[in-house]
Image 1 (cartoon, rainbow, N blue to C red):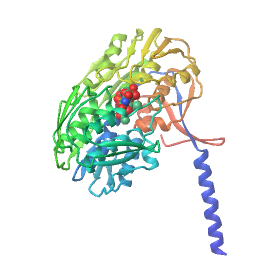
Image 2 (tube, rainbow, N blue to C red; image 1 turned 135 degrees about the vertical axis):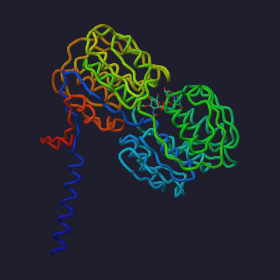
Image 3 (cartoon, helix red, strand yellow; image 1 turned 45 degrees about the vertical axis):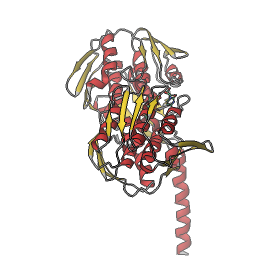
Length: 455
Ligand code: EPU
């Protein structure tokens, strides 16, 4: 009798948990219309972290990585490494201990792997370490076709054979050992540049990547590999030379600050005509963004590791941007900048020159009353028109950040759904915005109930 009771209880409890899991909807609720003021501290760079964590696979000893952002993409890639046999321990909020020495597999084909774009770095790391790799095709933010042909072209040039299995898994194998070579990238690709660097760092001889991407996180990955004993020169220029080594030793390494997170808070400060100091950053990485703000008449003061953005004088000029690989204006700041430009009277034109389809979020801004039309790669913004609160969704990570910025401009209360995209890449986004005076909270809805989650 007693056991039957326990059994029934367990079944009912499981059904209840399942229903909550299925029907629980998390949202951000933002009441805007007031300027942001104060200081915000920037976390480590997401796009450096998601490459450096799998790069530890190449190492022959444990490593400690500092200034890791506490975001769901980092949790995901850490779990993937754990599934593969690595020990991954969080030492504190921003430090990870990773021991890759117990990884006995060269395969990563779980749902977790499919769930994130950056899992493609497992290909380069495993190929470099074991000479073969089997990795599920990446998911992640969806904006148009996201090919990886340049990654595969690089691996093949190093001597690997690659093939697509069942349309969903990439296999790469090099039976005779990777051999350094000359690789010219047909398009400037961050992912291909980093993936080839990973594989080539354990190849025999020298690899030269021409037309390489130059983003700060490429320099960061090279610095990390070099600190372990790799021999990589030229990162940050469009020609990178990698001489393969046979052993990489453990290190303690600190990741660079996130330029896109910094750019996001800069846009929010300007959009609300506030004054915010952005701390823990490298001003040089933000030059293309600060140049645009200066052109608009925003008062920018640079310090060694901080930038003050003062838009309180009000009268801002419209401006145009064109996204380009670094050192051009970053595509990952395009949606946030567009949302900010909605507040500036006049016609501004955005030219998205990196991704084919990164304007899916514009229809959400239009629901808020924005006057924006899209023509091919151009978004034409008639700024300064009245906006009204509306329920909107984050269509991807940066689009979600753009929704928060737009909501902060509106004298009213906006609900933003699909916030899991935002939490993929922004650490403590609610706390950080609240810290500069924003009225933002995370709520969850289960049926008719609305509850606030811890700030
Ligand atoms: N491309 C190809 N072939 C390839 C690779 C890329 O044609 O093999 C094209 C793409 O279709 C795109 C362009 O080249 O048009 C640039 O793509 P890239 O490879 O540089 O992008 P990625 O490495 O997949 C990273 C960031 C993105 C960021 C881009 C561009 C990570 C995990 N992702 O993606 O970040 O937009 O570089 O800077 O590092 C974000 O953080 O929100 C984000 C999407």
